[in-house]
Each structure stands twice: as C-alpha cells, then as structure tokens.
Length: 194
Image 1 (tube, one colour):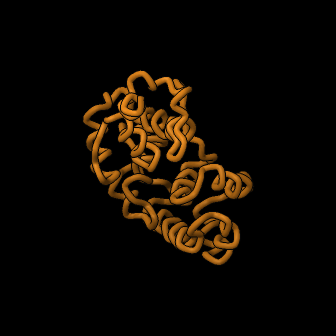
Image 2: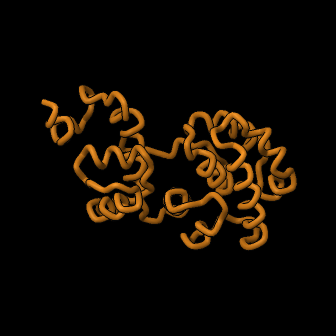
C-alpha cells in the first residue's frame, strides 16, 4: 500500500480530532458511519459546544463508550474555543491537554494534519511490530520508542498507515492472512510456525 491513508472520514481538522477520539475502542468504519452525515452537515467546535453533551450523546450512542466520549468532545470543543480560537493546536502539549486526547491521539493528529514524524501505536501497529520482531515491549509507549529507533524518519508519518492497515487487513489478530502477506518470507512469526 504505497499510498496508504487515514481511513477516518473528515472535512476539517476539528472533525479528524473528534473522530480519532471517537475511534478508541471502536472501528473507523463505525465512526465514519455515525459521523460522516454530521460532518457533512457542518460539525464545528462552536456548534458542538452549543448543542451540549446530551445532544451529542444521542448522536453518537452507537459508538462504544459514548457517554465518556461525548463528555470529552464537549470539553475539548470548549477548550479549543477558549484557548485556541477554535483551531486544533499543532503541539503535543496543547493536544494532550485536551479532554480525551492521549499520546496516541496526539500522534495521529500531529502526523495526519501537520506531517510531524510521529508514529501512533494502536493495537494494530503494536501487534504488527511485535510479530515482525521490531519490538518486544509490553506497552504502546515503549513500543513507539523502539519503532521510532528502527524506522527512518523519511518514512514518518506514512509508516503509521502502512503498519495499521497491514494489521487491519492482513496481519489480523485472530486469523492473520499469512498466505497472502508480502512479508511472509521475512516474518519471524510466520517462519517460526513453519
């Protein structure tokens, strides 16, 4: 996948931030199904903050952990309006100060919107890196540091999409499709099964 891209639908940076927050413990497909119509209708920090938590929760209720996510999106929307003129900030510290935004979400935003050389380690990136022998870490943060040591900066942030999509569609958690994998001949996990 030489031109791998983010699979979350968004029109504005704010919408991507909301979708990444919503995608925790949920699929991009489910987030897109719920959010695309809202985004196309105009989903802004002002409008979201104005509608409030109850309205947002009713709109996103089919996404896992909806009550917490609704609360966080309202808080982050208010914070963006109060501290950043409604714009998504471009620094890790400012992003991670927003409700519902941790290191992984900040990395996605910094990479996708600002082309920073980041690597967001989600469950797919963690698993693929482990299976390929790129790390033996127990946490995503430690795995991120190890992967950043190995991956040339010129491949960042694109490497995030390569790894996540490989994990999502080929190197699946339960039934990896090793037969059709382009990395099968060099994959230590595959070779150890032979």
